[in-house]
Length: 454
Image 1 (tube, rainbow, N blue to C red):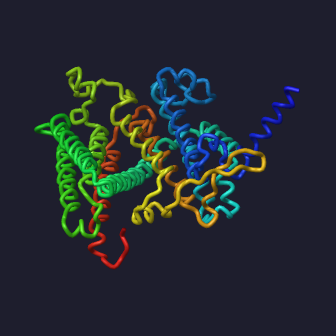
Image 2: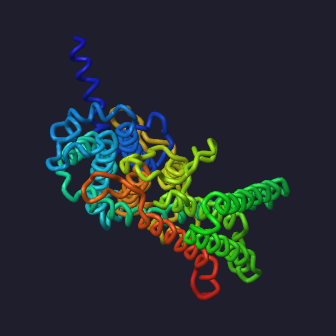
Image 3: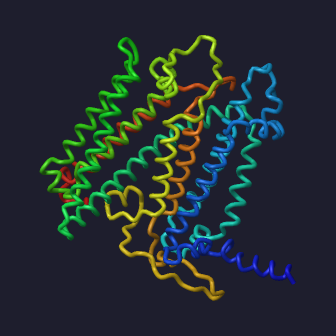
């Protein structure tokens, strides 16, 4: 009897695991839209893979990973290296690369399958919004297969894929931050005007001053700790240029003509962009292989010399540093925001291939089996590009890979991992391109007055 009841219970779950609607979360979110729940579940897949990657690089995990056949077994599984490989470092690094390779392939596969899906009536929409158990099996299968990829040049080639993908993802992060700042400013200004409550304006002023103060403080600390009087010329140029660029976009954002064309443009957005730019600048400088220009936070607290000893083990890696942790926090925020966002900004919607959604979630519907279902709000048209959403998660997987491995570049002999200048230039150039993109959103309505930029 108990077995029969268990089978019935499994049968009732089968519709959620294999059906065309993501009803697994409907009990918690009975008034949610189908599109929102789907994005949240896919984001959960990404976060699950991220947690597995984090576990793989935790101290002590190398002992368990050595048990995988042909995977740095005994610390000397690669012929010709004569026990020169630092297995405690290289195993965790290779594991993250393979886990993120699997996630990238998984999301890229769905990005290709979902091209030009217009409504939920498309047969492919059922694959997008359901069959979660089988999707999980596909992801697990790709992950297992990735761990049998031979070393060869895989690590080196995949590093460059990660660098390019992370460059694009950093720009998407900036776009989402701009969108978030615009929405934040618009909501608080409307609350102040409609309720005749000046407290909202005071709150906006406080946050704007706080973000600008943090950005200026960061600049001062960069000059003190990441430059030397007779060295670190690149860092001096990076800090100075980004400071000048941030001042320029802040001034442009409050010009009378810009304010006339975009009433909701203001210093709050500029302060958030400036602070994010300083974070990217700091993140870039922490990848400089010159330890004299790239001191660790531990050296700040212990007053230890940052000069690298000539005999230091080249395989030594500091996995958990401050810039990596902050990068993960920003990544989590942007991923969650991308999953639930409903922007009123036309420019951002076009850039992110998202439709403007004025409606909110419904009341939920009850299926024939009595289970609560999410509202299908995409029968007349999808509210976001399925393909672009998966492409965004594909880039996020590459960004996670680079962040967890601290942007270390594998040597051709796989005997060492070291910071590299390509990682520095990728991040700095993305900060410049991001500032240019934000500046363009400010001046575009002035250059093309006949177009709709609301």
